[in-house]
Length: 126
Image (cartoon, rainbow, N blue to C red; front, top):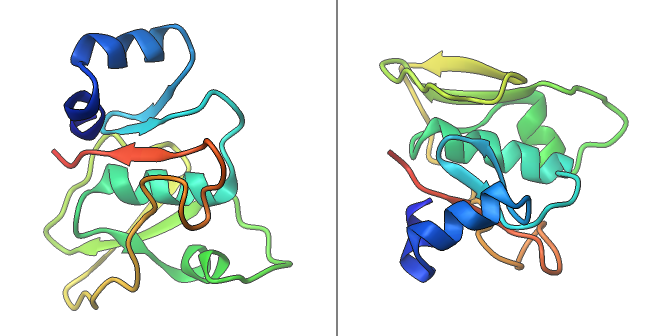
């Protein structure tokens, strides 16, 4: 939310959420459209909500990389062993590791990448 407030104002952001122009699927994440949330967007919402050290894991990472034909509705995340993300969407499965690798990519925050057109995501880590 901090990104959106920096670009507009807290009042403007709240107005867009309460009027349904934007969505807030997790405490720290805004979706800057009011349409259906795609599978790609759901994955990045989970990553953004879990914090800066979170990354997609397992089948969720493979789906983001192009895996097709394997339906898994839950989103799998990998976080450092000491991390305790809260406020995550209910479909998120958290896996912990003592040996995290470097993340492969950064989530899109505007119309580049898998989020197209006027759709976008904004995240603010706590």
